[in-house]
Image (spheres, rainbow, N blue to C red):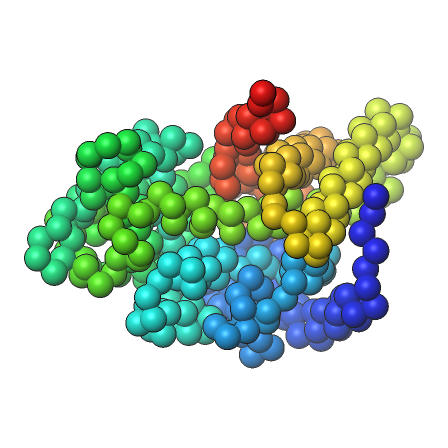
Amino acid sequence: MDLEFTGQERAFREEVRSFLQTELPRDISEKVAAGKELGREDILRWQAILHAKGWVAATWPKEYGGPGWSAVERHIFSEECALHSAPRLPAFGLNMLGPVLIRFGNEQQKRDILPRILDGSDWWCQGYSEPGAGSDLASLRTRAVRDGDHYVINGQKTWTTLGQYANRIFCLVRTSTEGKPQEGISFLLVDLDTPGIEMRPIKLIDGGHEVNEVFFTDVRVPVTNLVGQENQGWTIAKYLLTHERTNIAGVGFATKDLERFRRLAREIIRDGQRLSENPLYAARAAEIEAELEALRITNLRMLANARDGAAGGVESSLLKLKGTQVRQALQDLYRSALGAQAAPIADELSENELTVPVEAARAAPVYFNHRKLSIFGGSNEIQRNIVAKELFRE
């Protein structure tokens, strides 16, 4: 089964393509294509362009400033952005907190916060994981104790992505130790300039600074910053994760990476033979291509079901698993094809000092960075448990 796009959906794809070809800044797309790290200003510049078009919050309804797209239209937009090397905007405000506030926030929170997410005035980061509480998030220990009109927070969060750019953080905190661990968690919004907060960078294996750890020492947060009800945080967290996994299969990104490998395989000559004609590389590339096609078809099946009004199920976990495997396999193949040229290059070297093409110099860092795909959005081990419980239950 495949998804037959309607005439309206095909017209929408053409509109998206035209927009990306004319409005996506070339310097930004070139950075994305080369696997370079984007700066804060690069990201905000692209967000401003999308915001002016009304396309910045793909999952939001029109009444709150979103485009009101269907699941199929969101898929088309995401796929075309990947194929045109458009940057993926940080999901924390647009794809995660925004939908949470629309569903659980009060009118004051919606009125004050949602417009600032759309126009980039606020850069949000996520305070979920802790040392010892990652996949087992219910074991988190950061405490928030009620003191009059404030909560007082003490604890630590880790793997806070792009926290160095953020001015606000949404956190899961423990407000009760009674009952099951999941029943004592609340969802708080925190200004990062509040006294008692310290953010420290974590240097990654690729040499980049993408994640951080955040320490809270007697941080006072107004009770009005509570989203939903006290101790309702676990329900909110589960809802938020369904939005974090939106388009997590990354079919468009994998398709772009496969095209890049094919181009490279035609250019590289090894032992007097084009790499594309080497039986081992050709067989591995064909295997990944077949897996990608199966992933694409499964993703389209889900979109067809969503168009018919069916609720999502275990398929999102399957897509996350296979999408991770395909994208990591492509990066491994690409790095292997480059051989010695893909050796890590010191961050201190400028492009003029490199002895290999810039794209080759980024191959190893991009490969290492893709290892995170197995973890975020729910680790692959957890996704396998979800699949097993759903498919093999009595």
